[in-house]
Image 1 (cartoon, rainbow, N blue to C red):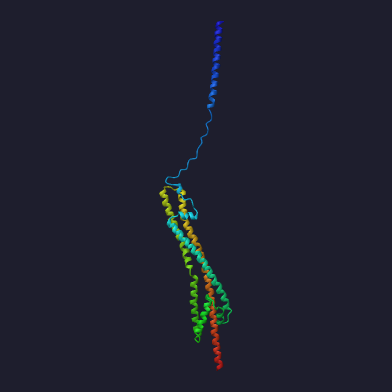
Image 2 (image 1 turned 90 degrees about the vertical axis):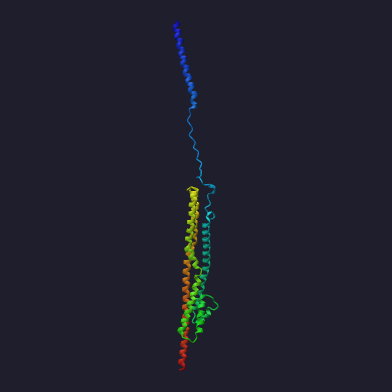
Length: 290
């Protein structure tokens, strides 16, 4: 009986030991479970943008307006820009002054040409253009003066001398009308090349700056190239209107010359008509005397 009790006690102790060991394992597992958690994803911070060595961002040009590019340009490029600006102003000044002059000449010449065309004699035409100071009036006055000085001479010689005077007057009028247009031709032909010189000089300086800064960053390269190209743009702004105005004035001057030539031809016809009348009256008097 005692042996059975001993075996039962031993069995009970074994069961209790197993139970305690299982409980301790569970408690240990529950105590360690909170420590096993999912690791938080790593946070990547944006890298700091560090400028390239040798480049001071505080000194980089940011003003790409026309005034800003002019202020930041090299002294040679500035000189080119100033010269082209003066040429552009001169072009517009010539355009305004010559436009008023040439269209006034056309208006006055056309008005007097109609009066001369409707005149029946040189004396009547001279009355129509009295106290006028344009080319048409000079033609009539020169013809009347030559006829008066050559009175009694051969009619053919008078016509030749009148035509010679007309040539000189027309030539002087042509020189007066084209005065100033040569400047337009010069500006139109040279301005693009002057602007190109400024561009080449500016780009050369930009490349020198790139080599000194040891960088090819667009923020360093672009402003210098933009300033250089701005010189070419100013050259085109000066050249294009100059060429356009020159061509317009060439056509207007050609039209005015043709109008003056018509007045000269009409005046010469009046001279020839008066001479023929005088010759016819002289022949009639001789016939009556006989």
